[in-house]
Length: 418
Picture 1 (cartoon, rainbow, N blue to C red):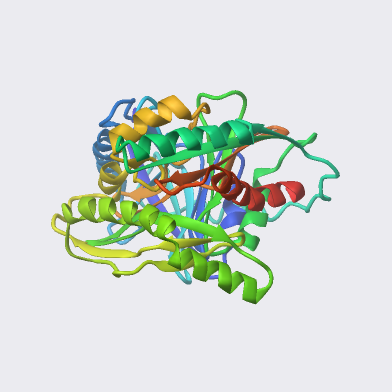
Picture 2 (picture 1 turned 120 degrees about the vertical axis):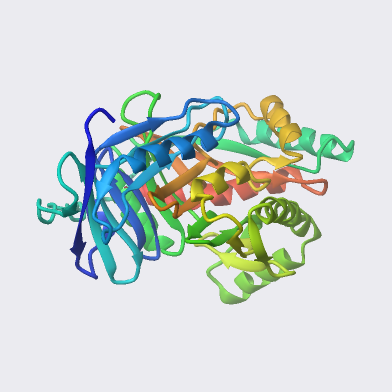
């Protein structure tokens, strides 16, 4: 940072809608009304690429935060990031000029970072923009799978064969869907729609650097990678899924079959074991239920296991935990490095920031990070949607194709109105 920066804060009303604070080029991250919307760029921190990129980013952000003056009673400044899945993509974060933040119900702040004197915000309330008028639904959306479903099924079959030979225990294969809407897509309108459909998911938007045009990653993900509040740590990995139905009896039956499925329980167990191993290195009293729980989104049931623990070392930040956890077997596989090699062989798409960590960390080390799933990279009138499935020994290629189709559905429905 070339000039000294200072942080100031202003209370916003308890009913303030965070999405009204989202603007083109900004970031948004919210679940059940809690989260933040960030605009502008007071500072950008780029840790480069490589296997230690997220650890470096955490250290560099700590140094950047230490240079920002702030009133001791004001909320700490934050940094937001959408980090690429692969290590060859640089890890970078932005300390926004202005962020609307609500971490507890009714407690909403406008935090600004700029050159000046720390203290209360002197600029007054920002002119936050409300909801845009809804569009009519698309009469036609052009869709092109990438890869084609039969190619994806073949990749699944090859992965199952590798697992059968004992080369690995699990791998997560992704596919994408290219959408040509025929008119400009509105990320904010899409966020409104996704939030209305799945308010218990993390609804997010993040600008994408390095691609063509002004690309924005927009999505609604159910998976909490990690949350840190003081020394309290939480994580809720997901793995294993089944279709949801409008009929209550069919829906309950689908959930029960998922819970009893040996294939899905194995897929989930791989993730739980690795997350437990990782978090035990940082936490005392790490707890999680012996049996997974059922978590439902608009279109899909998931198996979920919530973790709770307390940090040994209070200096470990939320981003340090992200560095240790990513990529979990929920989005990569197990063993991790073997799964990465299999992805290079069998997955023809470039993931970009799909399945990467997305979220925020503040100057105190607190933060909340999700995994960027059920998302689309939007550029003008086009979008690339992403979805993946966990492959284990009992996986059936046609069933995995169907699973990814279900995961596309909610985003496709939202795009028709976005």
